[in-house]
Image (cartoon, rainbow, N blue to C red; front, side):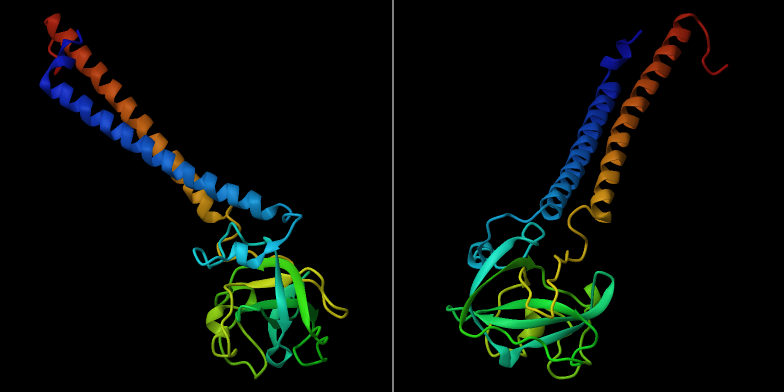
Length: 257
């Protein structure tokens, strides 16, 4: 009854079906891998930061100088001297549901580069009260590495601010305000001086990994696996229908009637 499966037509159809199933399974597995990668990033960034801080140069290296989702929230240390002459206030920042601003003071390292250190946050409008003075001399700051901000993220704005204020914390916005280069991202100091509150870790745009895009990957995974199952279902349905037609012909019945 199933001898027709050995004909060139059905052999070719079987080959096409197998290729289609393999492609669907491969694409589904790839999308699943993307989801798992984003989910693992979520677990690594949503958990507690490593107990032992590492030097910033060990995280932002020449081979990888930018902050990634896997390094956001990483506990780092930076040694240098604060530059109070170029201190900046970052308005429109919310902490614990209250509106206020960051106090950002560049920390110049021995290598000449500076780290944008947010020493803390306070409620109110910038300039309403003087910000606590930065420590003098060489200091070692311990904090959590943050991703550069982009326009519209976490209240960031572009332009239109008075002198001494910064709308977006990023190397691109600091390049015209500081006479030296800066590391990518910024550091939220763990220990805030009196009058300031330590800034919590801020996740970059798109979340900490377990975002809408991650669940889109999971949805695509299910779709591709469903497509693979549909190909299998249609194949067996066509085979069964052809077998029934062959059986009817063998009994002298006309399948068209």
